[in-house]
Length: 229
Image (cartoon, helix red, strand yellow):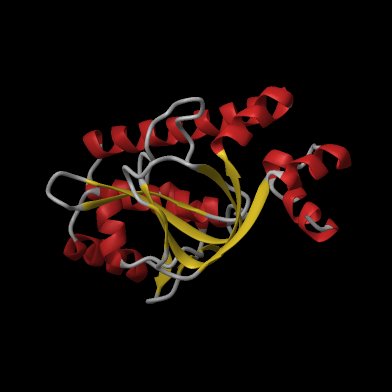
């Protein structure tokens, strides 16, 4: 691996505290791969082979129910890892990962990654933190689906996506950089595209957001959060 690659690996939060010698070792077990838009990284149920770290691009993870309907789990961006579960287990991939924007990924075989965590407890701790955060997020979403109306679920999802897309500041515009359709939003909040269209139009009329086919801009994050109170 080149010095440039080691530098790029260090930009991934999980590896940011590694010393140069450890980064070099990491580089020897890491493969750099490029994926095109709409390409699948892996499919749900496929034999688990590796852990992936996003250098650039956007990855959608999803599961398919018995009726063949897709359920979106998350959108992952630069600096994140996936999958988040199943380390030290001989289990298949728990979900499907698909590229939404051309992606550059760093790939480490499961066996090598497990050894890396044994050798570097600080990395193991960070992985556990990531897993805990994702579990908490999933729990919150399940609670919202069971106890909140569609409007609340949609607004909460928009705020979360904006915060995951980058730096957000109250009383300032925030941007959702994930390429989303209204059908995607309906999938995520357990509703219909028609209901999502209606609520988005309502929020536009109240000057809370602007939406186009390619992006969503939350005009004032604080004002949008206030609608959940």
